[in-house]
Image 1 (tube, rainbow, N blue to C red):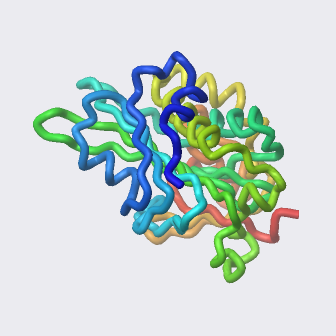
Image 2 (image 1 turned 60 degrees about the vertical axis):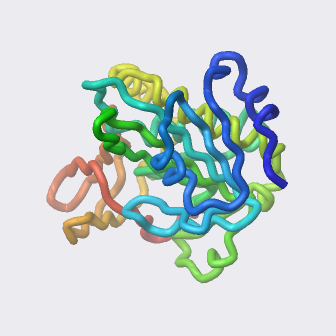
Image 3 (image 1 turned 30 degrees about the vertical axis):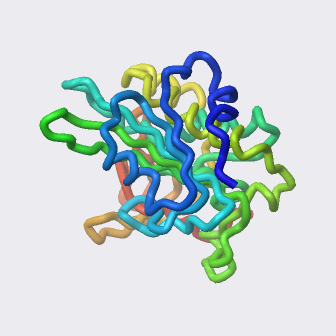
Length: 260
């Protein structure tokens, strides 16, 4: 059943009453749908199913019926920069929103995942899209598992997935969509200095990686091994390696030795 935009708007509250809300059935990607649109005002789009959902590095995100798939987009004023820690800031606000809905125990795994005991519950994707001649748009996508994806059984132990239903906590889907949209809107409205302050204040309590042995696979083919030591206020991972401290702005992170 297609979601009710009025109920989503009610959960979002008066601060975001100017935001357009679109509820779709089946779509290739909620983020791609926004990219194709005009974005005359900030817009939230959610879908029952995505046929081409994706995560970082264009990797496929399993998006079957029953999940929560939300993207939020708006035009960026000229000269606006995107804080590098924005995906982590979205994650912090989404953790807060899920807790308010009775979903406990969610933490954050750099660079863009929400996890429960190491199993992936949700992911955040931030994209900046050129819209010549109108400038740029910011699109923030969030995928949240309601059920554990069927392919999760074949994944390595450090890449497990989990759904809200497996945790015994399934709030109304309109409330979940609103929580995801609010997280994107609130984080996206922050200036860079405010994002840095948020990271300094709240990241340590949400950090799922500090003290864990990690392998970081970088886009240039370099693989690094070390122990995670938090993140900088700009959102870069601090990794203690045999050759000293490395500051990493991107990469695929795997935890060695399990999460127990």
